[in-house]
Figure 1 (tube, rainbow, N blue to C red):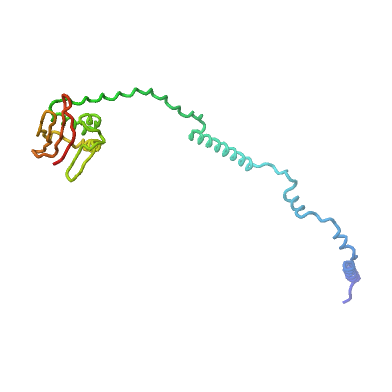
Figure 2 (figure 1 turned 45 degrees about the horizontal axis):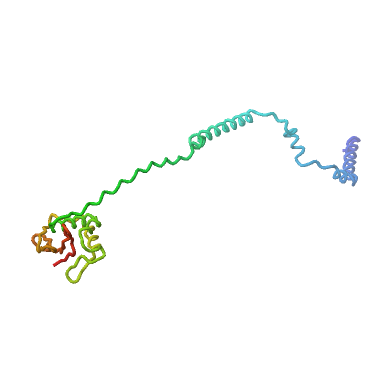
Length: 226
């Protein structure tokens, strides 16, 4: 079957186009490469977002701003409440002023010293001396003695002795336990210038006091234990 003239023409035209495509000039790719390249993302950014800053503010933006304002007001109110509760908004009170010193009252005068007992009975002198010694009134106790406080006044068994000051201090230390009512005192010897007084407990002699006459009274010179 022969080929028509139109078919032959179409086939020849296709072959020309193919040759023309294959024989494109060598400088065309270079000219294409020399075209200035657009920054990356330019076309996409323009196509998707349009010009910058032209988007309208939506309801979500307004709601977000209102919520921020409400939260800010709430924090401010809460801070004010904490300040009031903590008392930091109150003015600082001045430090308390020291109270004025009370007028010092005059010290009560010491009681007048008890006058030593004066008696012609030697047992009364011994009793008065023991009462003053047990009460801690050393000056009064010394007044019934004819020796000085640093001199020996007590002599015990086995060579023991004590000065008048030591003897008086020991009596004062035992004063709360002393009870003169459990003792009896009797004159064992007596002369015009000297006397001996015995201190007994249940008729047992526990101490003996030697006294000498001094005017119208007596002075104790020594105390001994049998």
